[in-house]
Length: 279
Length: 285
Image (tube, rainbow over all chains, first blue to last red; front, side, top):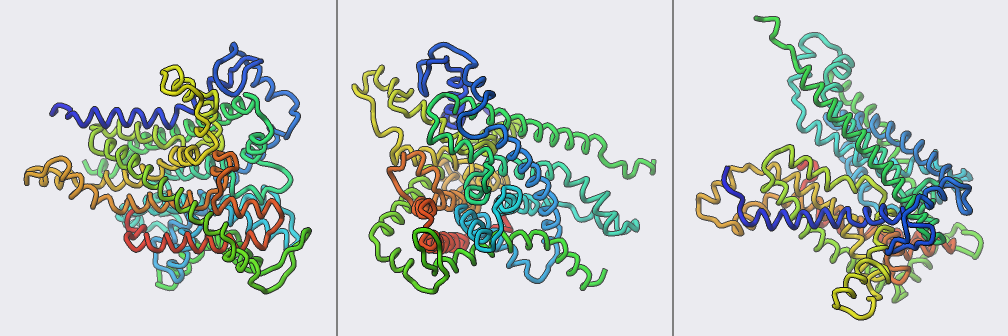
């Protein structure tokens, strides 16, 4: 191998600084969440303790953190499943030409670039004017889908652009029905990417703030709860909560990545046995 | 399968997505547009058809200042995210040699995207606060005598948070296009006697244009539509269009919020339309 050029080391240093910039603040609040009982929002640490974490588990003076966590988790799962199913269907649809496909595509792009507050305001107004009550599982759910579906569909575009159609043709030649082709050929091949779509669906929903602001109704989701806390909580309990939900997100990301990795490995290991009977 | 059938199947497959977008995207936009012509009293909103909200909006100098400020945030954030994002993507694509390391480092860059934006904003407090790490360090180094007041709750903090939150959106599409550049093109350029800078400027940058465009669209629309970062990081001292809208909402002035929202949406769509002229997104995925 040729030796590293000087620009490599410069760029590597820049990259290192970038990672520090990305993760530094989060690591800082993770450290500060172990702040001693008398400590404040900044360094120095006045001893270390689990005081602020314990505080989280006790009855809260403001809000309902655990309730909001449960709601966010449930909503995340709902959005995740819907995003996967609807995006795969949409991705399959876009492989063919159909009337209105351009309109639908531009709607998807609009959904991606529209300022979130418009969705919040629009859905909120729509529900209130038609006498419906806004609720995180109805209006909140739908509003979040306008953010997760574009990501899901764009991933599906990327997947199907790289998809080798000869597999399907082979299945069809062997007499498989369209449904069998989908079930036994297409879906297994794209399965690892679907986990990626699921990851986007869950995490984007779990952290979504702006689109849920006016559409969640009287029961807050976790990001709304945290936002509420920023205005009236000025103790490291905020950091403890931040650290916990970040750890939770990281665990979820880890799980998704592991599953993807396993699925890819399984696919590669099993591979194709085409031709093995010929020898 | 007949031609008719294939069309019908595609329709059925696209139907759920179309349904969600009609109910939660198109209908809300229509609703906002309608309400933007309504009137508001202190307690309720009344159906009407007049241009009062728009007249007020365009008649106020605040509007122009706030829109200008929004563009300012978008432009500065874009410049920083572009330079940083391009450099990071370039390092990953051309200087990291094995695919495993490329994927690992790329994932390290994208993981924060899947965590909470609000937490990531909060996490700047111990850094930038009056007694924060930055001030303490600068004082102990003897650079300054008094803590800097403009680190947190200022335009500086707003831009910093934007860059922190959104550089990812530049890295990912640019890295994606860079990975698809045929390495032999670069070798050909080198054989033809181009130096590193010339290769970068004449070969890599033009080939990365689609990725740069997609990243730019993301960053610019996210910044232009933001209201929470500006509110939180400026300590409510600066305003952008999103905050104008959210302030009206807080005062229950929905018609005026709706009018501002319509103008914001049109502005964003015009900016996107201009940028989309340079790239076909569907081809680039």
